[in-house]
Image (cartoon, rainbow, N blue to C red):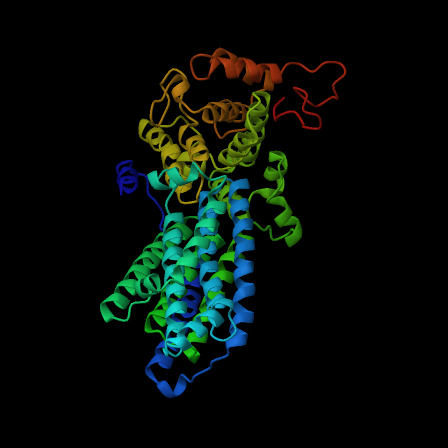
Length: 516
């Protein structure tokens, strides 16, 4: 609301955009989520269409391999989240693990053929209780798994600046393994009669409570991810929206306790759809359309930030960068060059690999907020008015708001928000000063100014590298951290006679900047 007010006050017209992608997505989403819901409603309301299908052996052969598969994918997604420094993916891996709990309990508790199901059958035969407890055990495991899945999905929708998310990310190196261990304990508890009764209540209020909790969490999550998808168009975000709808429908079947009916098998289909949608969404998010799938997936584990910049940045992020550059044509290639310059300075400072990856990803999206600044202001050939400058100075804060929706970690968010802060405190948007500005933002500030000076702009020709570095040197202690300026200038010292022509600062094979 604040952004719209400021734009209006500046008297700059903002064109209304007709979103064709949004229109194309709505109907498939409604049909994809609404179709199974309608099918379940028909089956549950017409008993003749919902026959008994007690395929116990098939059930075990379906769900136990699915449980093993989800554990493997959980570990993979958790590792991807760590390597890509993406809190959203890391927390989604824990939702995936919770789905595995449903599969495991279903398999182990299957009557007659499940390992624990056989043991329970002997106990219940002595008690002359028949097999009525089987659906309860299966329902209890499904309830626990569904609620935990919904809660992790919800948590993954919050930015890394959220207090709870930040606390969890402090354990991010161990989080996936810790949660898998916790799920083993929860799975064992499900087979205890007291826990089974708690998780699979027979009363209508108890059933309604579980449906309400899961539906609320899933609806809230779906709404947040839908809003994020409208900003970023990431496939994984849309996959979570689908998963939330299917999870709610599946919960209804479990609460009604129609075990071994046709509707119960539709429930299993929904679980498979949830699993596949999250997995496919993740793969699509990090797959370049022109690169083979195997090559794209290998890129996720690439430890070289240069290689990450070349091939590991996801297609949606590249699309965002392209959108920024199309919005401001004079910055074509700017994000990539700034990331390369900042990466090299960070390496010269012996920053750890995690910081190198953060500066790469934060750098590539540091001007994301320019999408919210009118193009006629960004490309204005003359001197900007005070109102126009006020608009331009909003782009770090606006970019920060956009970047929060992408699951970026705090280090990357700091780069986006504070790369225009100054060492002397005269920068924007928060007037931070000195070491109060995060190191990675201070690094990017130098790289950003250097590329801006050595690139063509609407209002001037590019400067030479020597002139740009002279300016950076003159701003040490004013605009820039003087210690970082010394390292930067050392990197850009004139090449020795032994160096190949066309390279600077020892970076073999990298051409000199424009305007040299």
